[in-house]
Amino acid sequence: MKIRLVISGILLVVQGCPPIIKHSEWTTRASSCTQSLSTPLKYAVIHHTDGTPCFNILACKRQLQNIQHYHMDKRGWCDIGYNFLIGEDGNIYEGRGWTKMGAHTRGYNDVSLGISIMGNFTSVVPNSKALNAAQSLIQCSASRGYLSSVYILKGHRQLRPTNCPGNALYQVIQTWPRWG
Image (cartoon, rainbow, N blue to C red; front, side, top):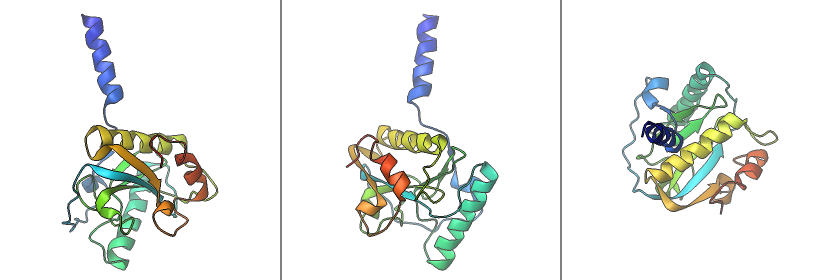
């Protein structure tokens, strides 16, 4: 019986969702976003920020604040545009989260979850920590009902005229489950 309990505990950990660093843990700026998403969503859209990569939590928090400043102060958005961002430190950072509409893929923001890996992945692939975090977040989103059980994975360039998420990352995500 104890063995079954231990095995069950291990399965719960394996099947559980990855830790996510809350919005309030990386910024003091409050979001003014009010448009809610109607879940489950049809698409998971992968992006890159096309900026500086980060490899530790302090550098990633600084980069998140820089992106948030650009999105809010230069573009006039209610917050950072992505639902979640991922650093090459392997951490997942909450942007607008699962329930607020992003500003990442015009024409698809109301039917998609926008996930961006911080950095420029035109000629280099994100490290395994970042790639594994992205896949775990997608699986978690589907298991919690935020993504449809038959969601479709897209790269930003499939939905808008852009080079995002960079050629190297785009090649990788084409091998992931539910690519379409």
